[in-house]
Length: 325
Length: 155
Image 1 (cartoon, one colour):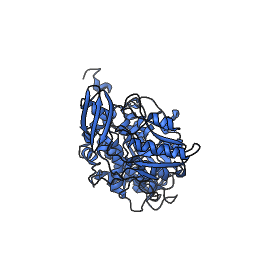
Image 2 (cartoon, rainbow over the protein chains, first blue to last red):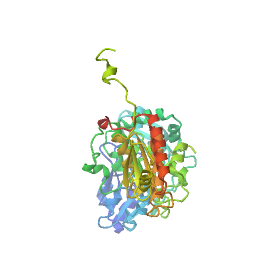
Image 3 (cartoon, chains in turn cyan, red):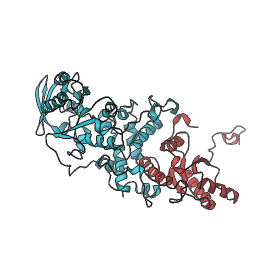
């Protein structure tokens, strides 16, 4: 796959169809893959990778990159293509400046999960038919992809691309047994005291690094509320539990109705806070109260929070049901 | 009773809890409703502090959270009845936003009775007073807001 992608990108570059390529480059270690813009075939040849560690969603980089001169090629996994479609829908990315190439994905690997399986010193990784072969300093190790998947890939909703210009590899299908709301339901079933204690335990680990906001493809404001020094909640460590709650509620609320559930927030959190639980709660509520909605699914339907119906559910009765309608 | 017993000096005596309630009222309906309650000599609890907003949809989720952070024990949002918004559709957006926000607060384990949305028209002075009495009673029964307070603002 990697060689196929490299060749295609190089061909499009030399044809002059695009003048830059947005992809992933190897970092210091094989598992710290970094999103990078490649400007020449040499750079591509040297640094481009598409490995089991390419979990990063590239769509957000397009907001800035697509404003530059010329056309940019981007590689999108199925879940990334939803974020891309949503950004195009919101007019954040001029569609004509981007050449999107869909690439297949069967779940990406979490280096931390590998470490907890006792696999360290990884120097190479290859995936084939759901099996992962890892070259480590202590010899070769084999695991299944499912054993060490990123949190976001465990609840993959589709392997089908939403928006791209061409496809490398095979188009997949929607995942029929996607159970992404299971965890949310588990929390909902707790008593309020248990829920409070649970979220205190999770959110109190937050160090306010803002990584979840910076990586989120739905968070594309030029100036964020959390960067306003006059707000009193600008970038700084949270002073008390209230600020943690405030930050996380507002962060999730600002992307409600636009979050495609790409799971990047949970992936990048250095404290491993399950941030997707907040985003998915909003998605679940929206689905239950206002009908099924998937952000980035189609370019026409207005987002649930910029739309209304005269007979919408009242806040009181909705909360009494507690999303357990 | 000894001269300096705590009871006599009022020290250690538990004062009855009086909640702080913030009511966001839309300029066109609910604020006028509150005004009507006043001119009709209907009393409603003094715990309610009204903040006038141009439309209920002016209220941003941060306002609600901030009110709790700064010491409110309950927050109520009053606007025109759906369909009667001065700006035609503002309160429809409010309704969706607050539904999601309150559901999220409930999800985080914050008592759901501390938040409320009520539609009060300019002609409903009696409803305004009744709503506030009921809300204050509910929040008083819940006690102090401890789960969504800013420790630095505790008094």
